[in-house]
Amino acid sequence: MTDLRIFLATPHPGYEQRLRQAFDGTLNGDLRRWDADATSVDGSLLHQLADDRPDVVALGPGLSVDDALAAARQLELERPEISVLLVSEPSTELWEQALRSGIRDVLAPDALDADVRGAFERALEVAERRRRNLVGVEEEATGGRIITVLSPKGGSGKTTVSTNLALGLALEAPDSTAIVDLDLQFGDVATALRLTPQHSLVDAARSPVGDDALALKSFLTPHVRDLWCLCGPESPAEGEEVTAERARAMVQTLASEFPYVVVDTCAGITEHALSVIEISTDLVFVCAMDVPSVRSLRKEIDALEQLGMTHQRRHLVINRADAKVGLDIKDVEATVGLPVDVAVPSSRLVPLSVNQGSPVVESEPRSPVAKQFGALVHRFTADTAVADAQPSRRRRMFR
Image (cartoon, rainbow, N blue to C red; front, top):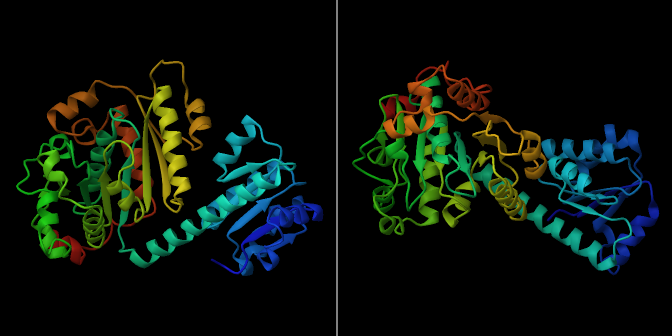
């Protein structure tokens, strides 16, 4: 916890006293008010925060909502460890805008003392977890990007997204990518890639040297397109042998040797998924175009927010995006609170590719579906010069 806990940006000194009253006068030096106006919030907020490093920034009351939302978006990008509150009259529309701007909570200016204190205490807890997770990622970072693919409900096309993303990355840069099947009950990455594995993630977990990079090589199954796969167990009973800690350690080891590690998870948020999410650099959320899927995804994102897991880059993929079901992309964005990055259209090529074990980026690279998966791949390769790099130690080793 830092010295300054709460940074209050408002032109109203009376709200500072109100906040101190809600905490029964216990804040003392933990609260600082900045006499903000629209111009200063727009241009000077980050400069003001440089030395204080607060846990929570409260914007308002008395600030323009548009200015406060813009400031929150800037904080989310440049200071993700900070938890942001907006003090303004809440409404459904404002809540949607606030969530998309990275704001943790919207608090009415005339809220009861108990509600004020509760909102700030929750924000402080989230900020503490955010800092802890960010520090953990910095300490444990091993060089490669860990891309975890998530969906709250089965049948959304998560494994299809995972395998097309992993194979697309491998096609861009051979030997750059490993995919891990972390669905320990019914994982089918091997089937989707037409692989016949000799070993699985369970075998690697059983090995006393399974976290050593050279030893881990013997448990990977190679794909003909220079993709490497740590396949799922043969049965749900075997999967119970793999602990969350071992799964996390193996993913970290692969990230020390591969620029990209794609992790396919089971539906929902399991203990194993959480352990990998904590060390992930990117989260890819997969959602179908139906109300239950969209609402479930909103709950999943809220759960990660509550756990303080907000340091990862987020990518939203909508599957069967052209389905005529009474929803459109804007409805999904408003409910989920994230912009849609990739919209995959419906196509018979997808189930056909799954049945053949050949992802569409390989079997039908010119199709509209493959082009959308290519756009997802580009989100990871655009700022990485892996494809043009000279052969590295990791590439020589895994060849």
